[in-house]
Image (cartoon, rainbow, N blue to C red; front, side, top):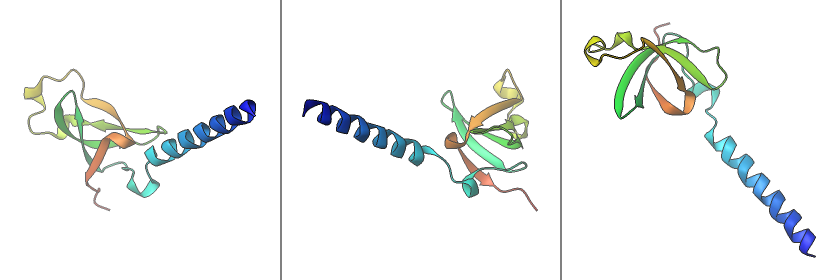
Length: 95
């Protein structure tokens, strides 16, 4: 009886974990594509960037030099990687 309860608890925990992972995934139509402008927060700052690569499974590579104040921010890099769950699309690229 105790073994059945442990097995049931393990199965329940596995299903809950799987459901949680599914909820965190971003739908394909909500993912940014090359040329889209996205916004995201990093280290307490708001950033804007243009997507330059979408070849990664869970994130995009983007170029932050489109921000008017890019040089004043003294950032170490022009590009960064942002997970799909951590950005919002500000503007889709012009087709």
